[in-house]
Length: 106
Image (cartoon, rainbow, N blue to C red; front, top):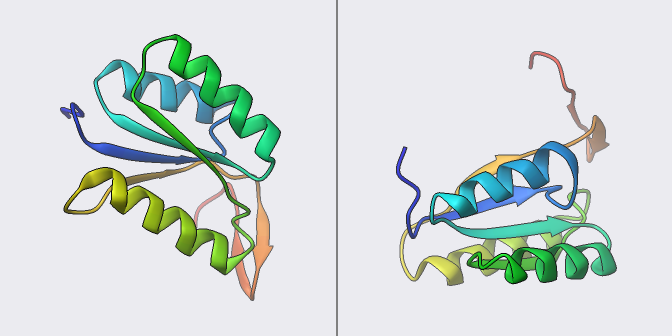
């Protein structure tokens, strides 16, 4: 898949697999949006990616908060200019408003 100039949103992208996905997409020319629930961690990751020359933006998001998800979506759409971003989700198991997500099969 060609990612040049596409917007890729990676939730939980400040370490581990999420960070590796963010880096790989950036290396392919994507405009990556990184996110995590702690502002200081987003800032540190953002600065690291910027120093590496990647087109990236970062935003504090708690996926358990609906308003934060809307904020993430709006931020990501602004990065595209038109159209909608790809979305990669890297999450530990969580429960949110009656929805149960797990690392296993749906």
